[in-house]
Length: 365
Ligand SMILES: [Zn+2]
Image 1 (spheres, rainbow, N blue to C red):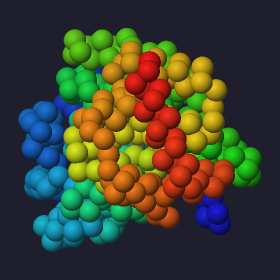
Image 2: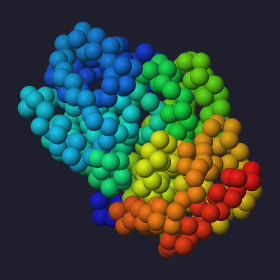
Image 3: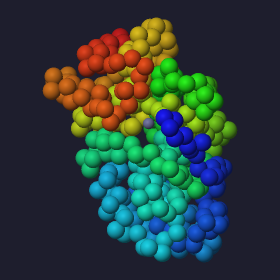
Image 4: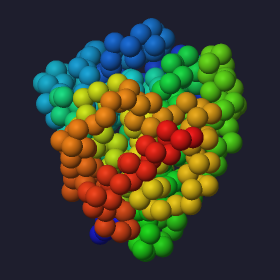
């Protein structure tokens, strides 16, 4: 919003209902008859059969490109070499990194994008940016695009059958929007897009605190319930609207910066994005010196739904060396990251101290 503001960086259309995948071809055929589908093997196992049938019924031909596990510049370049110049649509089918890869590819080559999430783990299907990593999975940066997805097709039935841990991680990632958009927008112009972004974040927060427990039970039973639909809309759509409306005034802040820092530890890669972000929220709250009661209440919610409250919960049970902590802090404070969106200066010592305090609290509770 510093000079340029993309009014509502959202998909042209977001459609969410149970069983939608069976009519995905009809939707896509309105825009193109040849597609390149970027997907992963697990994602394609979850959605491929129904999607392929629907595309064939609607006369849409497609080629499949399996991505190699990281949304990196190298991977996008590799996929670009596979694109048939006749392709009219780039389709991302999968989780956040697959979709971000397809999104970067579609923007690099100027072809329309369709996003079909197979997990409710991030807002990647609706946001106008890709989070880039090295081939080894270390955070690099996030290019913001001037065009977004043409279609986002969300099938509740597919998401209800996905492993529940991804849903829980998505809830963590989305709860962060509330804390981060408030921090990021502090002291910025209170224009309507910014206020709208923060309100979208509040709506996400309230919806998730209220409905997550039921939605998780329903997902465990594979039920496309109302609670699950509310949570999915919060995690995928409204979460994306936070930055979609507020742009640079409502970006990530310390929670995601700490997530980025944790990616410097190879064993943190077993933890999901939203789990590391959830931990990062606790670190942010410590940086902000929030009241203990507020932090404990959030920790209680984490424990209820299965989000990590300490490093050991993410499989990092050992004592970290000085060098490891330095690496975490260095990436957390990287100028390409989002720590600079905090309304006060954050130093390496402050991050180390906040992590130490989160660990103490996580052990004690
Ligand atoms: Zn995130």
